[in-house]
Image (cartoon, rainbow, N blue to C red):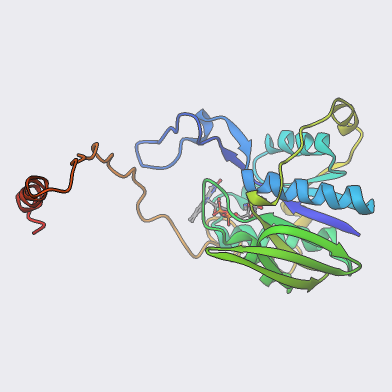
Length: 266
Ligand SMILES: Cc1cc2nc3c(=O)[nH]c(=O)nc-3n(C[C@H](O)[C@H](O)[C@H](O)COP(=O)(O)OP(=O)(O)OC[C@H]3O[C@@H](n4cnc5c(N)ncnc54)[C@H](O)[C@@H]3O)c2cc1C
């Protein structure tokens, strides 16, 4: 059994967010982190590894420096890393990204008792589309918003978080799960893990490696293979501080009415 976890390197939006004059993110000037939901997916995989001894692989599509993120995840306990990286893959939208990741995952091979895990959502692109799209392309059953995962043989029981409650679903492997932060608290890298990571395999899947896969051709990858494009990108104007009115008496109501009338709301 193995667990393949898709992880994305994203700009750290908790710091200063730099925006180019054309409205796109200035990624080069920002620190990068592992997408937070993906850390929960890695931790969930490592917990299953602790319980079953299975193999955990981390896979990312990104530029060459994303290999450093994979090494950090291997220092947490992942066994192998795959960096999917090629100029031909640049400019991919979610459709093309999931096409390439699905090709990479099927090249690794998904067997009867395997699980593919993703974060629910990336904090930069923010679409939550890539996990479900990979599942569709690999013809895998999927369960999204996993807040608890237990495994019994080839049956996975997933507690899904909904807006106003939970839903419990049983799914057979092989399957794809998308993970949320309520699932767990990701562990830190260990000193032993850091030493061990440089003996663990980290492979790069470039265009040559994937080009003959049925999911890959010029019409399905990169900018040309992306059915969506960014029409406009902008930072919404900052809202001014609101005005609080104290009390519920006649005077306060009159003041509220006059403010709303001045703004032509009433
Ligand atoms: C027209 C267009 C052009 C774009 N061009 C670029 C570009 O040139 N460079 C660029 O960086 N982005 C580009 N993007 C953004 C890029 O498409 C998205 O970042 C990417 O498809 C993932 O979508 P998301 O961030 O919404 O992920 P979500 O769907 O929110 O992610 C869900 C989960 O999927 C997995 N996942 C998502 N992306 C990856 C990944 N790359 N590797 C491994 N796992 C992943 C993770 O587990 C993640 O938690 C472009 C988008 C569009 C629409």
